[in-house]
Image (cartoon, rainbow, N blue to C red; front, side, top):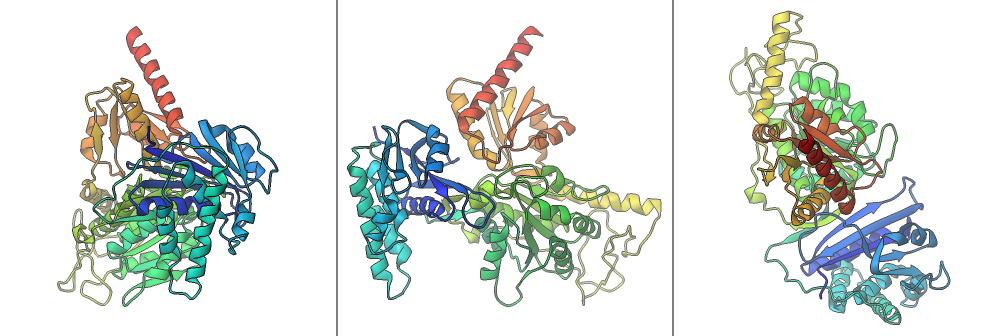
Length: 571
């Protein structure tokens, strides 16, 4: 039987080509029509330290990086010892014999990665040796990899032909070496290339592309893992008349610059991680109070404090919804896939303009580094919203309307003070109780303008449902499908609009006997918020710095369903 799914893990030391190998295999596969997803995890030092990546190739869309491995590629002995037990029965381990010596068990085969690469005249081609070996194991045609190499290294340089030739030779050497082992995993099923354009992109790049498509023209940021690549992307691509990109000296400077940009009429955005977002709390409170449109991307990592800067977590939900003192609750959109990252950025920019205030996009490390093939977005189908600008006469009161008013721009009519103190309709400071009540109702009332979020639902008649959020969507979806196939009666709900949550979704969840919420944090943060909204929610938590495994999640959901049914039977 042909294989429809192929999972490879590359483990070694940072700088050994672990990440390059995973991304190269994904790129080669998606070029001819396969679906692919990568996952990467590494230590926080600049170079070295135990690093591993994973690539999953499939004939159908990939929702998660997968559980058990078909192949482990161990670049060093530590990588072998750490990950060997995750290779499935019948799987294969390829190890770098220059770091080991001889075969370690019957499923292992040694190859001299670096020595083979050097024999091609290109010492940097070790990852191509590995890719050739992997292709042999699943009978992937050599032509697929040769096409990938040719496209990747055709850059208009004099040495391109030599580089392409050496890399193709490395692919062939890898195939020849692993052929000696007699190992085979069967044939990877053929695939038909889709009739639409695809791109292989990671979550941070998708967020950047979405924001630019929505009209972003003012980006200010400070480098912080795992959000730095958004700043770098903007520095390289957000260029031209009327556009501004700048790297500042702190997150406090970043948020205050965004307030200035938004006040001046710009579509403003920054990207940060948990520690940086904490520093933005006071500025976000000012943006809420003064009603200034802006977007902040928080790419979550393990915390608190420095925490786990290069590991994934979903523990910033409380701090993003409630970032400031006083009565503040910010709109939060949490994409669950790379494709959703693009659309989350577009919608966040629209929301900020629509309700005239700060919006948070809550991503996470696993999404930021994940490369995945998605349909190339059709920009002609995007709905882009721009703010309502006041163009009347002077004497206009910016904050007088009950819920929303047109926004004057500096130099135009209706000049006003964007005040962080409580204010009257004009923007002048006031401590009158009635004014504070009126302005509080105005600020909160505007959130109703954002209740147009969509959501997914299946098996809605089940009285127990699963509701994942963010990057846990993929593993949860695969676990859900496994449970349904096993005969469990369970419902599925999902939305990336965490606040405000679609009213129809909240109404439906309130009817459930139990809503299980898989989330990567200790406190069960979304479950806590759902309970505050009258929903019988219970979290299934994990806080290892790694995503859920499908089999573990399915087991824990099954156990909880059994417990709930036992309680119901005896009550």
